Length: 479
Image (tube, rainbow, N blue to C red; front, side, top):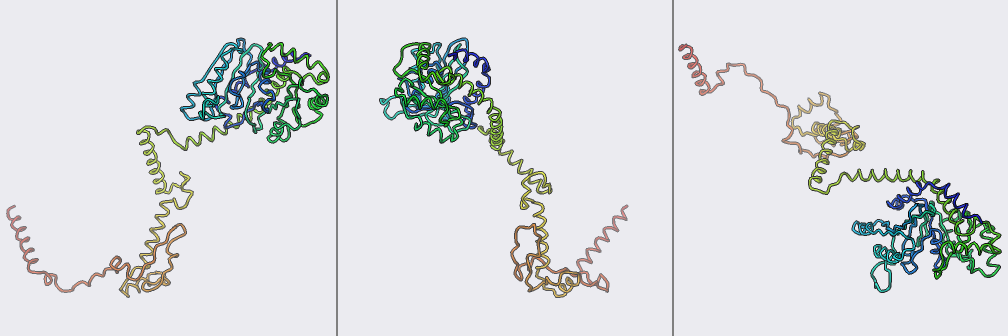
């Protein structure tokens, strides 16, 4: 087999890690809660060999006695770097500010992938995620956590690959589902494949990984596995791969020794009749690397557009909330701004500048128009409904052009004729005598007298005039 050379060529062709790093950064920032990101998730029933497959793909040996990964999602990021290192951190799932600070502060690192302190690191991570790690804890902690445990693996021979081990099923269309199924079972009736088919009925995003081929003893079982790998069943668009990974109790041997044992097994019949790109861990790693890169390239522009759209909506929501008002001065300034805006809109309404604000699209908010209509209606009511006891005045009003249909005294008045359509209220009807004492008839001056004015003056008025004349005369004599 030439898997190693093919792996090197593929790694060189996919050497640019910038795109994958951008997606990982978006996931770290929590964007995946708002916009689905392209990713590969690994799912499988208990005992299917999922952890062993992840170990073989990433070169990272998970602590066997640590918290089961199915209690939380685990993101494994493999990158090719000259120096070997592993960094374990936690990506919080929308926690409270206090808990977010606690989770963000959790960060552990080591230089060697096979370091003995990994067990302690994973236990500390479980405590930080508030997961119950043993029965001795009583009721303290939860069985599962929505936080993501992120494991960053840097190694000179690592592939640029990001896989996520999840306890459930991802339904987003940007997720490639890696289903792990043991060969020594009824592959077609596996529960994990049925669940995957529920979220991807066409099988376009499902890649099957068949494990434990050494436990498939019967020839009929081997034949069924070979049919799946050769796509004779046609149930998965991405097909199946077969790998042999170490069991849970297999702690001996290096990674190279395990790969040699795997290649030796697949050199035997009937496995040697299968396509080489569907066998062994290195071929699966190449396949996943290609799938992830192609899938990310195809979806990245759509992800950017959705992020921009989501960002725009949230910026508009923040704008509607206004500026921060945590201090007294900020709160006063905010109230003052509201008052100023109210005054500005009021002036627009009084000056009939209805195009300067959208509030005036409602006719009832056009203030000066309503005031004018009300005034005109009120004036009309005063004219036609005033109680005038002077019959001659009524005749005069009728002669001056007042509508004879709207008579003065005792007639019923049609209120709808008193105001236009823009007035959205009704003036209550007036009864006879309601305006008595408010509106009176016109004042008539008496006819002028024809006799002498002095005859109509009193003695006091005459004496006052005589005194004023004497004072004027004396003043003139002094000068």
